[in-house]
Image (cartoon, helix red, strand yellow):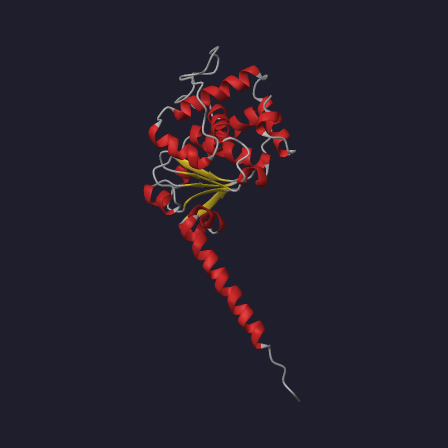
Length: 245
């Protein structure tokens, strides 16, 4: 009986696909380690202590409970601003600098990636920073992948909403003040991520300026619900300029 064999072209194609997949895995691990960590938390020394909350597996029960409580409080703060949260990112909490460095964090307090991942550093393991990063996740989830990747939402407004929603008193006056601005500016604000990061290197008041301008917009448009309305309009196809009128 004649044996069947796989054509050489199919074998070559299969090998090529495997090589490309291997290259993609290596690239993601190197360029976006937070994505790799969210995909395989155990590979980075993390374990799940509550749904979507991951901590270093060396932590004791008391430390784990404190982190869970902090995330619960941050989510509640955001619910007060956004209403019921729609995004369900994996939250990776690093309790030492080496962990955060392995996840690509550098000197930041926290970072987020689209609506999928939020990473907190030891300095960022508090309600304010957690709420900031989770607000970014929520914003990105609501405007959608296309608007996110094409940067249709100006970064100054995105960051401003995160600072407002997290009640970040480094950049805003306390709730109850008639005007919450620490620093106001009428100058044009960076709209794209690269421009924002470049400007932030020299303008150390950039975050406070964005928080001020966003708080002014919120105050003149009826409060926090106006943000959800604006985001919904953008998700439906409007530009920021149209949606923010």
